[in-house]
Length: 478
Length: 101
Image: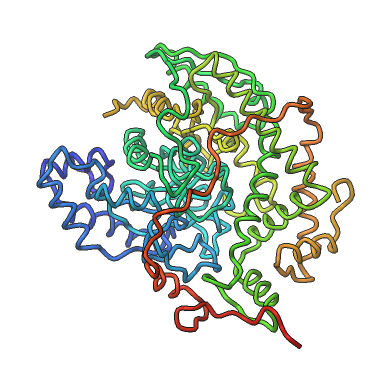
């Protein structure tokens, strides 16, 4: 293989390390150098970490000693979204509020990656507190899409997607509350996966919407996404919403899968060439023996309004903890109340304030029934419709986004930005696992921009997503 | 507020509830954006939900674990205290909450 080490997938890098074609140090240096060279332009990382010599040596020693028995992620340099705690490192959620906050413990996902021997290259840019779809809401500058630097890399995990797409990391972790892993993956030509709610522990993630949040992989291949998911998943005493292997009934499937397509949701709003990529991808799956079936998900048309009630409600409650008292930005005024007001006003950016106000509104007396409670009941209906649809299919497919990556500033009004997530939010509302896999490119102003096909699987059936994803990319899963 | 337009006063009241200040100069803009978001979210009005049935309880819920196996006192004190904006020894220092005058 002649390509540079930083362009390797996890699987390729793991193979090379075991074959002693290169060392853990060589792999780290290749990624760290690429990051150092390209980050000033792309702003994918908010901070690049110094090499952890102890961790690099330990990973090398383990691969030398255990060979193929060493974990696949051992010695693999990974980028971490800035809302995932790594003990002793700043975790700012791209907010002035936490600009100087140093994590006092490891997130469970961090601990699991450390146990596998993975290495952390740095922390990646994001929309403040994961509120956004473009990284334009970061307090520390936007991130550029490596495929076209005049366009957004998606969001909120846009730093992670840009880092992997520009080969400044072998893979990355992101978090997904309404599409924040899958949408940036689609916009940068990566595989992005949101696990079943509870499949991966939320302990040590900076919370946005606690009934929606999941951490997951952004990777170059479906196999890599699976390797990361396998390392991250599992019940955790520190997160009581994590699920056991048998919480959800096992989904029986044949080798050839039935793919449900809700055509009624795709009649308008989709770019014509993106729709063409979607139809071509479905046709190629059919040619491999899988079948396409129509499914009806009528309440999905309301998923985004439901989401923009539930998420701000949970966000406003979660962000109440930032009060300038115990940690984070602390401004002082004449009274205790003034301390709160000044700390929060100085610490939060405009989109964060917008969502806090919206959440405060939908939970306030006189409006909670019309908004929050109704949205919560609609959420139940949404899930029942998906459950019913899965009686006739194994996975449900649609495009991840209606359009490819947009230009900076193009979606300056909040609602047009929110519409970016119209297809992805449903999986967070139902808790079901979902994946975005590259489905070819479309041309805009002379640039070829990636697009993604999105699959949703029943609760607990995360494994189906990798199977169907590998069919799209033509990979053989290891 | 749901049918009528959001006013700068509405935004001000919500901001006070949420413990943030929205500058006077930005109240009108926030009110206009708020209207646009609420108009979009208001699509929920069209949705008729089946009467009566409570949605099934989720399979997983956020509950506190049972007490037991406490950690040794002080295990995390230093790490946490280092994040305090103001401290008095290992204690967090804040303004007086109850005044006696």
